Image 1 (cartoon, rainbow, N blue to C red):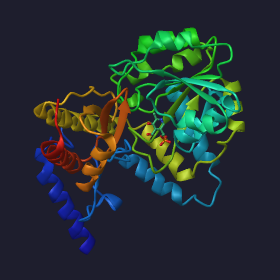
Image 2: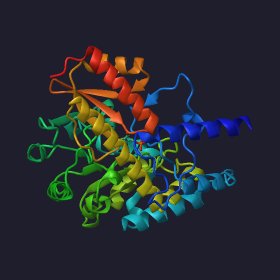
Image 3: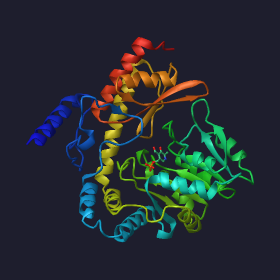
Image 4: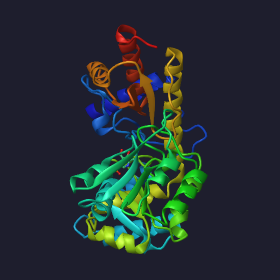
Length: 383
Ligand SMILES: Cc1ncc(COP(=O)(O)O)c(C=O)c1O
């Protein structure tokens, strides 16, 4: 009863804060979410708005949770059946045979395998800077060199410069599209033509963690290049639009020889049955994916409005986070926001400081807006 009351209260308080931007759960959507928040998301007095890790608080999907719960009964079995089911679902979705697919515990495990296969002593890995650096950092710890091509002033890729830097001793070219931390994209044409030319000279690893937030995910992925026989490796994660960051599921699509090399370097049967069962269900749950994207877009519209009203620029985002310039040292800004119980990340790119804020529930975003207004009104000398 106590638990019931608390959940009802939470539900009521969510509804009260819905004026921020319409929660609109059912309107025009086939997907009907369960009450949010639940479990660790339940607000305590000392809770903070966690807007620093690009998680997705609008899931996992109800269909995924049902599949996960059902699979727990099979927890005593090695999860071959769930692995087969997920491999089949991915193979259908991507239109490639199963020998082109490798599962990993999140895409981090696959980035790690990529770093081991293509890294190593004296290896050279080329990427834009800034970007998501997990693969290059792991390769560096194995002795590889990181060759960085800075983004332009507007934080776009310099594709021509990247192409010029492809030398015979380059081991791997790593790209993130949409990019993290910028939230910007290379269009389908740009990235596909780039990969088609460059992948004849060096393996190209494209991290598509945020692909599902793009307008046309199916048309924007570079898996087409793999189907044409190019040496391209695509990494995907369930951590973002599927809201599986804690359940740890990701996959790679690549040429079968590359999949074999990567599998030999780590991820072999590392995923739990319930996570794979949930991922297979989520992958087929189009109504949840649409809901997840819609909630994310509502969050972005709210933050854009807050920034517009305060006269701040931002980069329109194709992901579940927004990057915008700030006029304060990044560490100081982060501390001031944390004092107000809001966690964000900051970057310094070519002398300019930026804040990256992840999307969240309405009350998290309101906490961000209130904290930001307070921090900038008392301490920022805006340009
Ligand atoms: C571009 C990119 N790739 C990979 C990851 C790792 O995600 P995971 O290991 O949860 O799949 C992240 C996490 O934020 C990311 O931003």
